[in-house]
Every structure is written in C-alpha cells, then in structure tokens.
Amino acid sequence: MATNPNDPLPKVGPDAQRELFARFGAAADGFTADDVMSAAFNLIVNALRQAHASQSRAANHWDGLSAKAKELLLSHYFDGDGSRRNIFPFDQHVAAQLFDARKKGWN
Image (cartoon, rainbow, N blue to C red):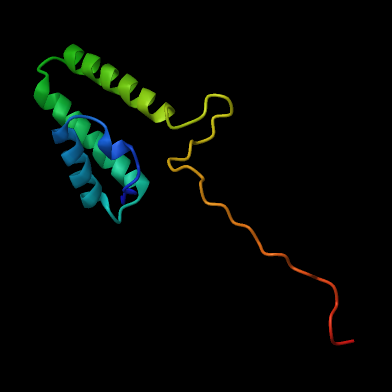
C-alpha cells in the first residue's frame, strides 16, 4: 500500500519500527487493504508465538498491542461524529473568475 509522504504514521515509533513500516508498505503495494491486514495479523501472531512460551503471556501481550493499535486508529477520527480526520490540511482555495451569463451577440 502506497503511503503519502506527508502522512504522519510513517514517523511514529523508533527507527527500526519506521524502517519496517516502510518495507512492509513497499511489499504490500498492489495488494488490497484486506490482504494487507490479514498478512499483518499473521505476522503479529507469528511474532507473539515466537516471543512467548505461554498462552497467557501471549494473550496479555496481544491485549496490550490491540489497545495501543485501537488508540492510534481512533486518533485519526473525530470524536463527535466519527468521521475520518484528513491527514492533510485544506489550504488550497479555488476561486472562479467572474462569469457573465447574460446573453451576448447571437439572437
């Protein structure tokens, strides 16, 4: 999935996490969002299995990651109406020149 260079998300976390995010994004380019999310979950599950010998420790770590991910996700939406926040400010203004619609010339 391509990421806009002005998106703040690639700047989150330590250097190693940002580098992995960039590599994952490059590898995911051309795939659907559902494919990317499923593959990302598989990576998380695999990392948790390798990092924790017990189910309870893996589940606790999952819960912590889920809470952190949900907080990050919801920070990109407005609290009031739930609409997505735009990553980029609307600083472009379009102004049409005066248009005179009165009939001229041909009858």
